[in-house]
Amino acid sequence: MNTRSITSPIAHANIYDRQDPASEPYASAALSASVMSSGAQYRRDRIDAADMITTDEAAGLAGTSRVTINSWIKSHRCIGVSNLRRGFKLPRWQFEPNVWPVLQPLGIALGATTGWQVLAFLETPALALNGQTPRAALEQGVQAQRILALATAEAH
Image 1: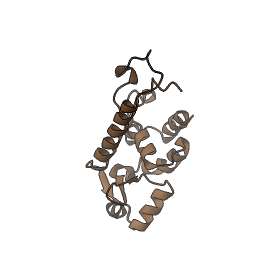
Image 2: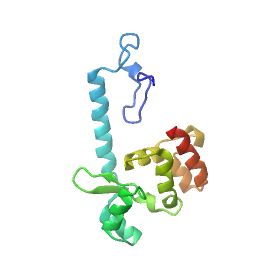
Image 3: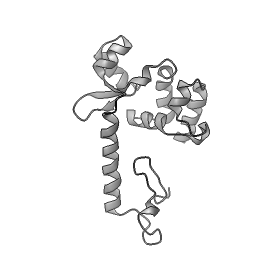
Image 4: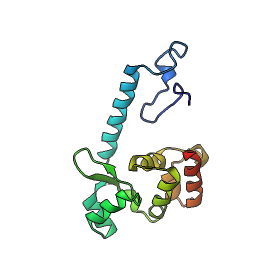
């Protein structure tokens, strides 16, 4: 992998924008720290977003208990991201009928080990979907198999 050409929705810039590509083959320690810091801020902002709910709120939506929601998070049946304060936060929209059945197969297709991986995939625009996010595509009726194929391709 060419580490100098990685771009990220978190970093918002290519390493070439910050250093002379001929001078060093890798990012500087300062640049790495900056990227890590911006990633941490992105996660804090995402956790605090209006569409994120607690496990108790998710349990109410799903008609189950908080314990069951925690079990679903651990088994990757639903998206849960570690809350900085305690417990997990979950995107409310994952319980929509066009999204819910795809979550567990999507996590498997991505080889995801955290909710952040599935969340990032669903919220990142994809060229294969004409710039639409996989989440929006699912909500608008795109076949789950197409999204799963995209996730499988991305994972490999």
